[in-house]
Length: 178
Image (tube, rainbow, N blue to C red):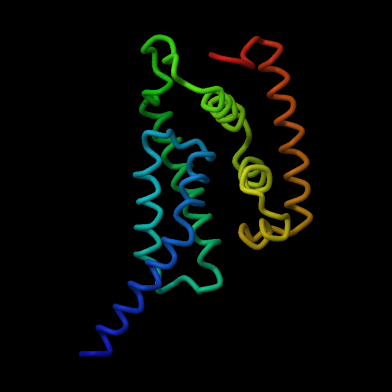
């Protein structure tokens, strides 16, 4: 019996280390992949539940990549479900104007979310990892399993589309507060 308990303890310790190492990244990625702030804590928990269920299948050197991929799939599923059910993020619902105490940083984050929502998922993930998470192209290639040239190409296209979306929103008068 001690071997089973020791294996369970080792598994529990590994999961604890993985959560401690990747929790903040997963939370930020989910947020940047379009999960509303009101649902991001639950989505983060969902990612780590999937990881816990499949922990024995995950190679230690692939833990971060697995967490990234799971976060991306959870975000996509939640966005599709929200679109299908017509749910609105309470923060973006028609409850009147934004409270006066919202900061400029909050408005900038909301604008960034609107722009990111318009990027295709393949471009969005590379853009978020490079521009917002500060990862290098080789790190992104390793994390996503993409070729380095594909990462560079997607990042270039994502930047072009990002600039175009910002320009269109600015021209339409949506650049500032909404």
